[in-house]
Image 1 (cartoon, rainbow, N blue to C red):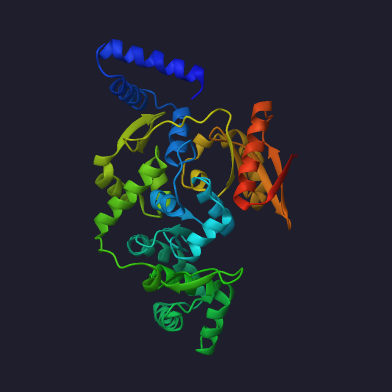
Image 2: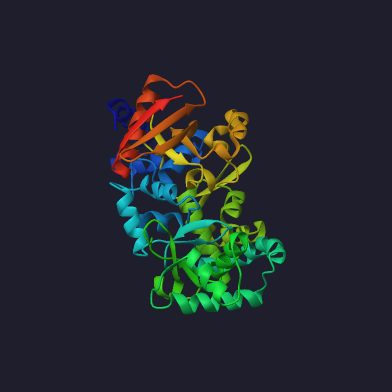
Length: 400
């Protein structure tokens, strides 16, 4: 903590002690100060600081990839390489090699869960999460399934085939699974193959296996995830809601419904079950829920970080106004599918960025959405340096 910050905290603590009792211990005064800040001062800026802290994007970091995924509950992962980087941002000393090791050994799994997109999840969570959220995903897929001539009879057949060929850790790539289906009278490629494989994931039959060279593979859930105590639907709703609001809060009920893929009614039910372990506050007529242990990030300002647009800090909310991107909405929307990555400064979107990975170096181009101050540009340089350390490659960057 900087000297001026320390002086301010000492002044505030003296104020708390003089108001409450001049003889209370300093540690208890600090607790009172944090409590007052949480209850009385949850401004929009503090929402950002609290989220940074709960996402482990502040000073505090997780020790491992499993700690990150277990804490967040699920990490969106359709962009495999950048999803790993999203985990690394929340860890100490993470490298791409370490993340690959966690994935290849099955310490973290990847499957379609909650919504029709990939997520990293923990082995002990995959079954109950699929049981809870898969019905909603199947409803979303049903319209396309009919066009693709996919029904439950076909899914039962393909699930049985996958179970047979993947048994005993006989990991297969998607193309290999397609060949096996073809030999057994099921012609499937493109979207049809994707749906068949996704249904097998939703049924908790298959999940990610290790990478085979540069290709991703599939494995049996029964061989990658330990059997755990079954949860009833209410217990699962409560667990998922608590995970979300503890790790992503302060957040609204509509944020949780969006993230989980549940209906608003089911999301509300989950929040009702978890609410005894949470706190809430209303800001600008919006009700936010969060863990009572939530702290405000104490990152030195300005601090910058490089993110995929699918990072949990960004994509896990229906209401993304706290990111400050509204003022750049028109410019961001004009990028369309070209928008893949954003630069965050002090919790808010300040730029977009692109990377070109070469043999020995990575070249990053930063496109500011506003004029950056000298200190902010220096913070960007540190963020690029962090990315380079993660890749264990030299990173060069320029402003557009």
